[in-house]
Length: 94
Image (cartoon, rainbow, N blue to C red; front, side, top):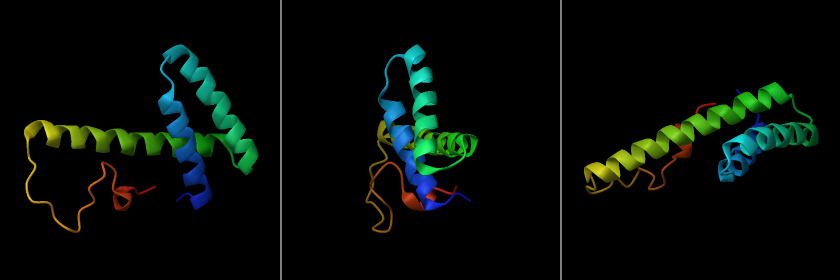
Protein backbone atom coordinates (compact mmCIF):
# COMPACT_ATOMS: atom_id res chain seq x y z
CA UNK A 1 0.00 0.00 0.00
CA UNK A 2 1.40 3.34 -1.05
CA UNK A 3 1.00 6.57 0.93
CA UNK A 4 -1.13 9.28 -0.69
CA UNK A 5 1.94 11.41 -1.40
CA UNK A 6 3.50 8.64 -3.47
CA UNK A 7 0.27 8.04 -5.38
CA UNK A 8 0.07 11.77 -6.13
CA UNK A 9 3.71 11.88 -7.21
CA UNK A 10 3.30 8.76 -9.35
CA UNK A 11 0.21 10.28 -10.96
CA UNK A 12 2.11 13.44 -11.86
CA UNK A 13 4.96 11.39 -13.30
CA UNK A 14 2.58 9.17 -15.29
CA UNK A 15 0.74 12.19 -16.66
CA UNK A 16 3.90 13.98 -17.77
CA UNK A 17 5.43 10.84 -19.27
CA UNK A 18 2.17 10.14 -21.08
CA UNK A 19 2.45 13.47 -22.85
CA UNK A 20 5.78 12.53 -24.44
CA UNK A 21 5.48 11.45 -28.07
CA UNK A 22 9.00 10.32 -28.99
CA UNK A 23 9.60 6.81 -27.59
CA UNK A 24 13.39 7.12 -27.42
CA UNK A 25 13.37 10.49 -25.70
CA UNK A 26 10.43 9.45 -23.55
CA UNK A 27 12.32 6.65 -21.77
CA UNK A 28 15.23 8.91 -20.86
CA UNK A 29 13.03 11.82 -19.86
CA UNK A 30 10.70 9.66 -17.76
CA UNK A 31 13.57 8.04 -15.89
CA UNK A 32 15.10 11.43 -15.14
CA UNK A 33 11.70 12.82 -14.13
CA UNK A 34 11.03 9.88 -11.81
CA UNK A 35 14.41 10.32 -10.17
CA UNK A 36 13.79 14.04 -9.73
CA UNK A 37 10.32 13.47 -8.25
CA UNK A 38 11.71 10.84 -5.88
CA UNK A 39 14.42 13.25 -4.75
CA UNK A 40 11.92 16.08 -4.21
CA UNK A 41 9.50 13.91 -2.22
CA UNK A 42 12.24 11.94 -0.41
CA UNK A 43 10.95 8.59 -1.64
CA UNK A 44 12.68 5.52 -3.01
CA UNK A 45 13.07 5.65 -6.80
CA UNK A 46 12.18 1.99 -7.29
CA UNK A 47 9.01 2.28 -5.17
CA UNK A 48 7.97 5.38 -7.07
CA UNK A 49 8.59 3.65 -10.43
CA UNK A 50 6.50 0.66 -9.31
CA UNK A 51 3.69 2.94 -8.17
CA UNK A 52 3.80 4.90 -11.43
CA UNK A 53 3.74 1.69 -13.49
CA UNK A 54 0.68 0.47 -11.58
CA UNK A 55 -1.08 3.79 -12.16
CA UNK A 56 -0.27 3.62 -15.89
CA UNK A 57 -1.51 0.01 -16.09
CA UNK A 58 -4.81 0.84 -14.36
CA UNK A 59 -5.30 3.86 -16.60
CA UNK A 60 -4.51 1.90 -19.76
CA UNK A 61 -6.90 -0.89 -18.76
CA UNK A 62 -9.63 1.60 -17.94
CA UNK A 63 -9.20 3.50 -21.21
CA UNK A 64 -9.28 0.27 -23.23
CA UNK A 65 -12.45 -0.80 -21.46
CA UNK A 66 -14.01 2.62 -22.06
CA UNK A 67 -13.12 2.52 -25.77
CA UNK A 68 -14.52 -0.98 -26.11
CA UNK A 69 -17.79 0.11 -24.51
CA UNK A 70 -17.96 3.10 -26.85
CA UNK A 71 -17.19 0.89 -29.87
CA UNK A 72 -19.85 -1.66 -28.93
CA UNK A 73 -22.43 1.08 -28.54
CA UNK A 74 -23.38 -0.05 -25.08
CA UNK A 75 -24.57 3.41 -24.12
CA UNK A 76 -27.47 2.32 -21.97
CA UNK A 77 -29.03 4.18 -19.08
CA UNK A 78 -26.15 4.77 -16.71
CA UNK A 79 -26.24 3.66 -13.12
CA UNK A 80 -26.24 6.81 -10.95
CA UNK A 81 -23.60 5.21 -8.70
CA UNK A 82 -21.27 4.56 -11.65
CA UNK A 83 -18.65 7.17 -12.46
CA UNK A 84 -18.82 8.70 -15.92
CA UNK A 85 -15.06 9.18 -16.20
CA UNK A 86 -12.83 6.49 -17.74
CA UNK A 87 -11.05 5.86 -14.41
CA UNK A 88 -13.18 5.46 -11.34
CA UNK A 89 -11.05 6.25 -8.29
CA UNK A 90 -12.81 3.43 -6.46
CA UNK A 91 -11.24 0.97 -8.93
CA UNK A 92 -7.66 2.01 -8.13
CA UNK A 93 -6.22 -0.50 -5.68
CA UNK A 94 -2.58 0.25 -5.04
